[in-house]
Image (cartoon, rainbow, N blue to C red; front, side, top):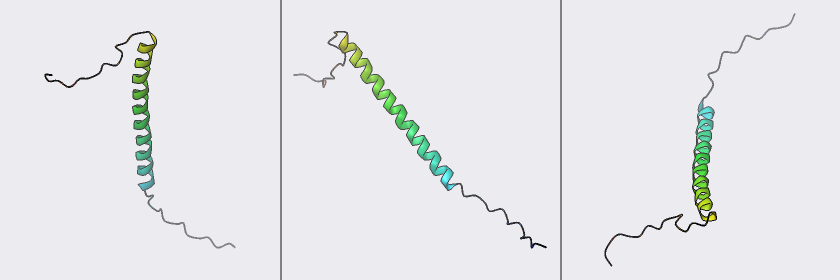
Length: 66
C-alpha cells in the first residue's frame, strides 16, 4: 500500500507580476506610438524637401515689434 498525501490547499496566486508585466507592455506600446508619430512627421518634412519646396518646416518667430 502506498501512502497518499492529502491534497495541497489552493494557494492564491499573486497578481503583482501580471500587473508589472501589463505596465511594461503598456509603456512599450506608448513608446512605439510616440516613435511612429515622430517618424511620420519627419517623413512628411523629408518628402516636402525632396519635392523642392523651401517652406516645409515653418520657423516660429517670436511676436513683437522690432
